Image (cartoon, rainbow, N blue to C red; front, side):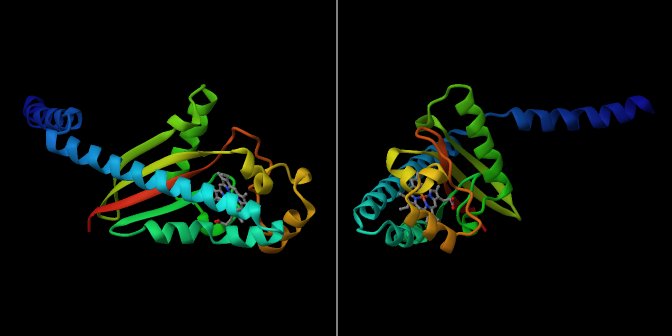
Length: 199
Ligand code: HEC
């Protein structure tokens, strides 16, 4: 009796193990690398846009006005690029705007970025992509860490060193803001991209 059970169960487990260990087929690997290329292209354009917006914000006469321009950076930039089935956004473990809230997967990836950073990896190398299944949908997800550059400190630096107008504007528009206190070279947050592969 025992032997029969063993015989019927063992091949089954064995099949699952083989399936889990099976390398991706050539076409699946090709599809993944195409998706990654697309994701990196979008992320690069998004990052350049953010940098451009930050420069534009800095050139504004009043920093408080600049904050209001930045209010739009997230969604406006995202909308421009969300053509097709890609969805793009920005998030962070220390958020300024609750609408940029991460989901559990994004949180896990950002925590792994912090860990990799602590282990000495450069921020520019901190990216991660994966095919995940969510509520019956097959999704391709990609995240890339965003470094804190000097220009970012104007609005995300140490609260005490922010210009009073910036501080006032932040208090007014983002009373729950915790996206301050960053130092040059810290991970400020991450770009996050999703493409639906099947409904
Ligand atoms: C002039 C002010 C200003 C500057 C400069 C600025 N930001 Fe922000 N940042 C904001 C505001 C306001 C928000 C919240 C609104 C939004 O989602 O865009 C924000 C939100 C973010 C978010 C989304 C997560 C969150 O906290 O809500 C990230 C990531 C981010 N900024 C990164 C950066 C980086 C990287 C730089 C420098 C390259 C930068 N910011 C420069 C004002 C600024």
